[in-house]
Every structure is written in C-alpha cells, then in structure tokens.
Amino acid sequence: MTTQAKNILYWLLRLIAAIIMLQTLFFKFSAAPESVYIFTTLGMEPWGRIGIGVLELIASLLILYPRTTAFGGVLGVGLMAGAIFFHLTKLGIEVQGDGGQLFIYAALVLVSSLILAIRYRHQILNLVFKSTASTR
Image (cartoon, rainbow, N blue to C red; front, side, top):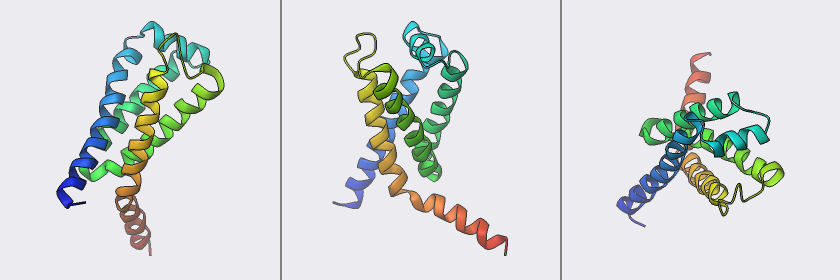
C-alpha cells in the first residue's frame, strides 16, 4: 500500500470515529429520550450522559488533531469498550427498536480508534519516555 493510500485510510478512520461520536453528542446534550432511557437504565442519568458526552467530544477532537490522534484513539477505545459492555450486559444489542444501530456505531468507533491508537502509539511512547528521561 502506498504512503498516500495509508494516509487516506487513516484519515478515513479518524473521520469515521469522530463523526459518529460527534453526531451522538446532540442526542446526549439535548437530553433526547433515547439517551435519557439508556443512561437511566444504566443508573447514570444525567451525570453519565453529560460526562460521556464531554469525553466523546474530547476524544473526537484529539483524534482529528494529528499530533494527538493516539490519545484520542485510546480514549475512544475505552469509551466504546464501555458502551459495548453495557450493550451486551444491560441494554441489549437493540435499544428501543434501533435495529442495533447504536451497537454497530460503537463497534465501528472501537475498531477505528483501536487501529489509530496502535498506528500512532509513538505519540504516547514519546511522551512517556521524554518525561522519564527528563526526571533523571
């Protein structure tokens, strides 16, 4: 695969993850009935809905900014792992007749974020090893 093709692929993954997370913010921040239902079922309404929304906004911005893609990827993986966990344990794959759409979105963001976190892991490693070296 050429360098240009790889760059396009990684930008596509960034856009998939960020657009899905940003698109769901409207529902979380506007207290849409579906979001309220989900977070009430989880016992996390309203603080969980708003808190997760803020974290998804941060993850999206980090993913889109090339110097922080890995950090956003790691945050996205954590958020989506939690979403998938709750779908599989408390909510079900299909929530209020959505045909599993939210579950599929969470899986897409998880896979995209994981690939980005692995691809750009040097961003995290550089931070860790630079700070370790400066403390010596």
